[in-house]
Image (tube, rainbow, N blue to C red; front, side, top):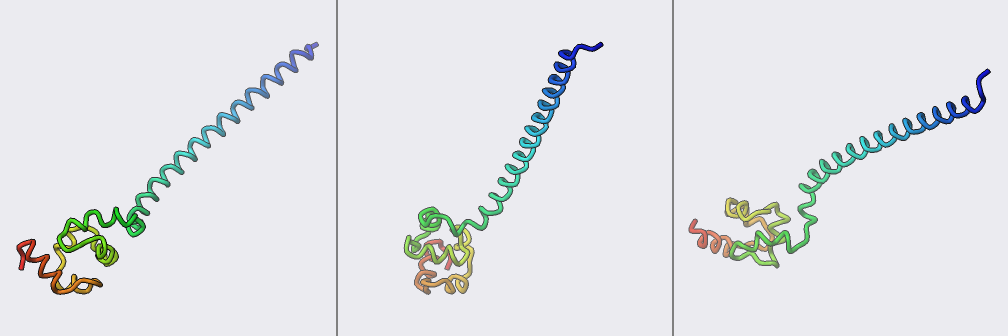
Length: 119
C-alpha cells in the first residue's frame, strides 16, 4: 500500500511545478506585451513628433527663425504657422509666397533679399 504522505508530497510538488510554470508563462507574456507596447510607443512618438511641431513652446519654435534678419519674436510665429519651419525654407521661398504671410510686406522681402545678396 502507498503511503498517504508520499501521495500528498507528490501532489504538492506537482502543484508547485504547475504554479511556477504558470507564473513563468505569465511573466514571459507580460514581458512580451511590454516589449510590444514600448515598440508601439516609440513609433507613435515619432509620428506625433511630426504633428507636434506646432505644439512646441514658442521660444523653441522661434529659435532658428530669429536668426534671419527682420524676423523677431513677434512675427516668427506667423512664419511658423504658415509652414516655414526653418530659415532655409524662408530663404528659398519666392517673394510672392512670403507676401502671403500675415505681417510680411514688401520692405521685409527687400531687406531679406538685400541681406542675402539676392535681389
